[in-house]
Image (cartoon, rainbow, N blue to C red):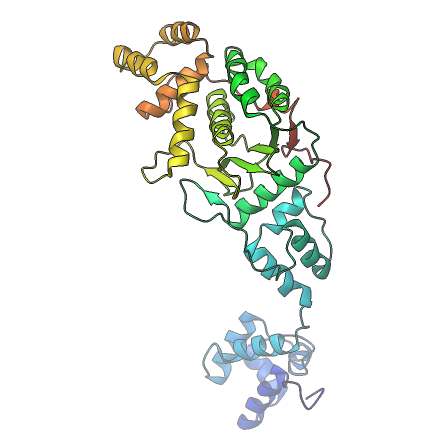
Length: 369
């Protein structure tokens, strides 16, 4: 019953051996099993496989372990299964390290055969080295010292898009002066649409890239060259207070020339972290002071806590010249009361994506790797 001397015998041969050992005929076994003899014959000849139910029935008939025939069938099926496409292993190796499937879904990579995918991933990450090795490590805040492959993929996408943007040379003086203009946009949510234009006037490229799953990135500061800083934002939290905090945080990195030699990926900026670097403390302090001066927000919280009324928040926001949602965000962060006055929070993603260079949220930036 071997179709080839090198192949594993069909499970039905072992049924026949049990019959021979007992002096039974196939008709005898069909009687014992209460089944049709032609069906049993097909089982013995290997035309049908041994089902789990039949494996248990045969075990009872022959008084053997109930897994005996099931294991025979399993071993036979595995031995005779087709060899899998070698590309499966290649794709698995890539997916183990990089978020390749998500990158394909987002339009960053094309869904091509495994060999071309290796070359494509190497080109995306700009390396001639082994595509499975990551040598580029950006600075990262709040969640560890080394950026993950998912975070690096997001970073490289920001860089690719930034390189496609035409922008005047960076002027630190102009950026510093334009901070007051940016602050004027904090009163009304709709004014956010002007931010990309003002940053471009300073020589700063703004790129918005939707984050990848588990990336937890808020923003990035990087430099294409000495005159070309880039701010990347994920808009991970679609709230007005988070937008302005992250934007000002990255602006401070640029003003202090952080990230010139190594990109800075900002992760989980909303979480307190006593171990962050001096660079991050400086950027956090500048961002917080820009949104609401520390002395003023502390005074307001002391005076109004624990009962923060909507009317008081709106009046305070008007007094300091910011949107009420920014005040609410600061109160939530400082008190840990994340559900407080959420009605005053507003979403801004739909506003800023109208005027900025965007990749994600259903849109693919028109750049080539």
